[in-house]
Length: 311
Ligand SMILES: [Zn+2]
Image (cartoon, rainbow, N blue to C red; front, side, top):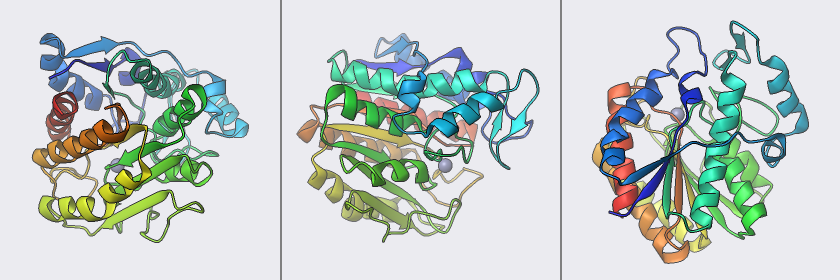
């Protein structure tokens, strides 16, 4: 195994949500506990991310959205941005560091510090659209990293692969206006947010959606990744691969109805690393999205990160 980077920050456990909310601080605690053996063995080097400033957020988000999130941040208590999405006193700082983690990880792999990085962040990002927060997400962390890679490092083709069980609608919105970003999402359908049909390909054809039916298990899911996602990823010839790593397609997850197991996350991670080796200099940056059964989440995150380092 080669060494990789782990971006973590105490703020990720301090982003406040109402009691009983599925996207709670225990999620990152479980992930960090699961990854600790890789830190202890020297395979993962822990890094503290910086906060994304407004200029970075504006690579994806409209000024009005950034100002609204700043304006909503409460001095105490919670505010609801929609029925699912909340902010407490630490949420703005946590969200800035979540986006900043992906940006810092992109800089680290592009500068050759490491080939692989994982960002153990919350709040997640892939549902946040340019103009609004949505679905537990305040800023579109991975899309900001992709836009940053395009602008700061001059990359012509950055791929985002999203295997969270929910469609990555926010990332897709960004790809629809930047043909240098491939957005490839495999997700359950029907399921919230309801977007991500196979015929949503974007004006430049750089959006790939692979909807899978409720009840789908690993063998069929892998077959669809193999026929519908990986060829499009290979054809795009990405110079960098970013991963929206949600683990809520696991069979134990309470928010969805797919039947993946840990080995399926090992499998897809190795496929993505293999593609990165062919066209992207081996560079992969992965960032946590969903995953709401904390035991399964920890196990899946370990398998995913282990495969990132081992592939
Ligand atoms: Zn999800």
